[in-house]
Image 1: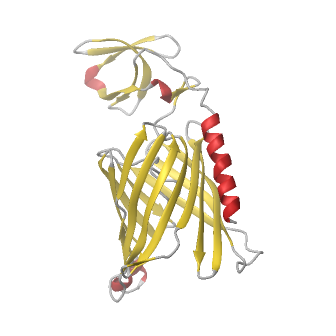
Image 2: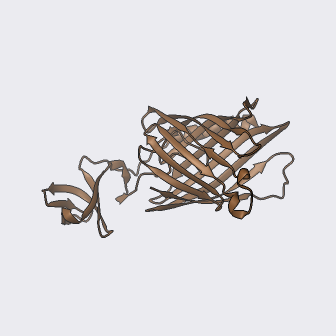
Image 3: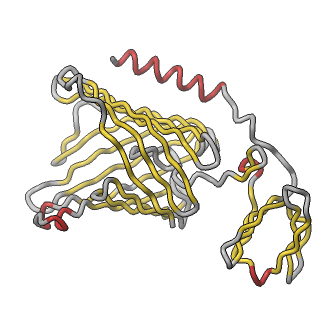
Length: 292
């Protein structure tokens, strides 16, 4: 099984390095996206600007004059975010796949709330461009379970770019506790992400720990995401590890759909091992994220 994993990694690396986003356009003109106080939005090339007005040229070559007192925000759009004439917003979830992290982190001041199947709750925030922290809880006390049996955790992560938008290193931990008689447990990990924030492959190793002792063998994680359109991503998150004398492989495939202030993750996870029931199909994955 390990040989198959390394073959898979080889072909995925070839795919990510030998294909290009040829649809992306380049331009020396300054593109801007303007959000108005009434909620409307405009995008175009900046033609001129005064203290009171902004003039842009839209995609249909129409000159538009906009009063500044009605503008909520005006941001420059990097040319790589214009794809086939459409604005593709930056990936707000580039720091993770479904659950496993990537080598990218949140930018300073960015954050999001993540919920999975109602019970799982986590808030993540970018302390700096290179350090992200998350805190989470499964509030079992809402269902009559004692507070002392409520799982809580933190997820510190460092992100270091080796080559901007091409190779990023990431490292961190998931540190969890169930108050009461349970000690500290979790996973310490390191990973490398190849590709940009919209199209990447991550390869990582994670060591489980509990009561101050680490697992003898690491867990291997191979995950990837590919942007399929203005609002969509194809996502896969996969694990290989040993549990006792048994090797376990977990494969997944799903997607992510983005809206302005909301995103939805969905997919299927399928474990493979010699003791796992062959008639079992897959675990469903469903969650949403609200950025802030």
